[in-house]
Length: 272
Image (cartoon, rainbow, N blue to C red; front, side):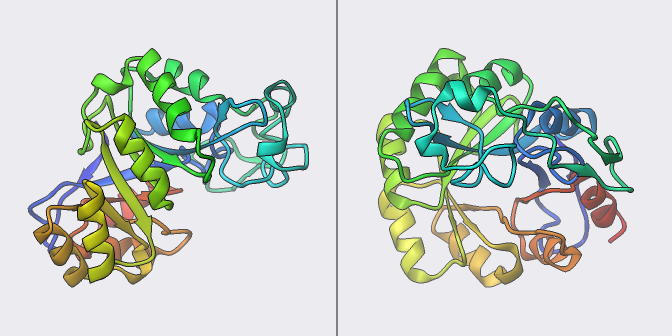
């Protein structure tokens, strides 16, 4: 199970889950097997990843809409075929920090590649609770994801909690969430947004979401309380490199957060 941090904050009655954001992405190249494997080695069986479609309709694990930042190529993911993407290196850009829980220094992970969703689901089946973000607005994305999730048995996992193995689906795009809920109504879905307000709560309930996920640096205990009264689970995102945002998320009463540096976050929260 993922590390759970208990304490005397407003979150004391709940377990606070640390979700490895794109894997242990501070310590290894984001959205690669190296980052997800490291998360598991460090004791984190909840992780988040992003998917979007290639030009020929294959779901791949890339956060940005272009390949420029995290591979040795340029161009939009949606304009690039899977054969080209499978040939790319996704680790040369990454330099392991001096305090890394993984490998230190330049060329720390020289053989990392961009996984497809099928690659990912096959590798971690039965091992993790995956928080799967539908990153792009591509109309076919939810249906492509559903086929892969069904193929590898993920639609029969725990959902709406942090139990591993399990599955939760998220997106910033409400239309994408509507498509996904229509296809996978038994899976928990959460809306990523800047902050919780009355309008977003009303829409979340109307759409049939189970969760609402505000940015950590703006979250308040009132937002959490309002969302919980509406029947919605709240976890946060957007910690970046901020210890203050991590502590704010924890004290807010949220059930957890995504974080690039889960091993460090565990130490920080344990000392509170």
